[in-house]
Amino acid sequence: MLNVEECIRLRRSVRAYEARQPGAALIRELLEAAVHAPTAMHREPWGFAVVQDRALLRRYSDRAKAMLRAPSEAVGWGASERLHGSHPAMLDDPGFNIFYDAGTLVVVCRRDGGPFADADCWLAAQNLMLAATARGLGSCCIGFAVPVLNTPEAKRELGIPAAGAAVVPVIVGYARDAIPAVGRKPPEILSWKEGA
Figure 1 (cartoon, rainbow, N blue to C red):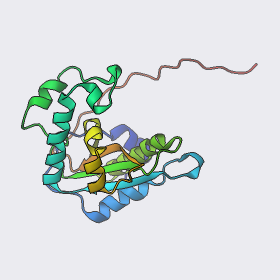
Figure 2 (cartoon, helix red, strand yellow; figure 1 turned 90 degrees about the vertical axis):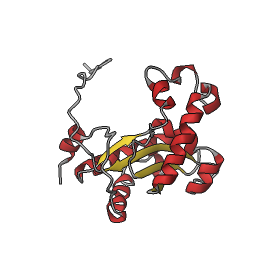
Figure 3 (cartoon, helix red, strand yellow; figure 1 turned 180 degrees about the vertical axis):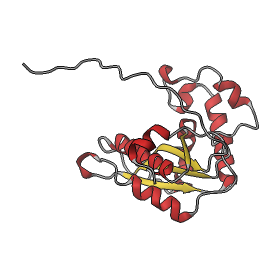
Figure 4 (cartoon, rainbow, N blue to C red; figure 1 turned 135 degrees about the horizontal axis):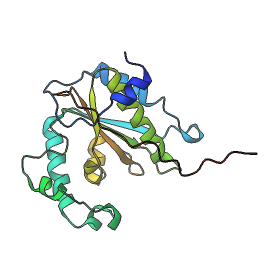
């Protein structure tokens, strides 16, 4: 098992996976790590939907691509969140799967709309991804999936409460290839105030 510093530095957004899937026991270990994330006012607002059905993932992918090609307002995105760069070309490619052909999707959901619930879900997702790294698995957040996973139909299929929402879709699996390190800029310290 890797230590936390190693996991932080080794975690990558993996976009190519082997056909084999992590077993149920391994996914439960990741979920157990997720629920140990910090949570505002100890609310623990999260719930998890696990999909290991490739046909269902393909259906969600196709629906997501259709939704994302529509005007941004149709998926609830504002001007600052519009697609840019190569994304429209990817979405027009019938072979492109937004889940990168991974066989496992873990959706970190909030069960209701309480304060800080989304932030808590993101913290849980980070724990899940670091735990995946420690166990030799790859992971990647899939923002493209959020609109389709929050449709009434998908929420019913995944058991997400009507007042809740899919917050962080994360694919998990065995990376097909080693992922090279990506450089990061040093921390940009906007201020550092010390007392006299």
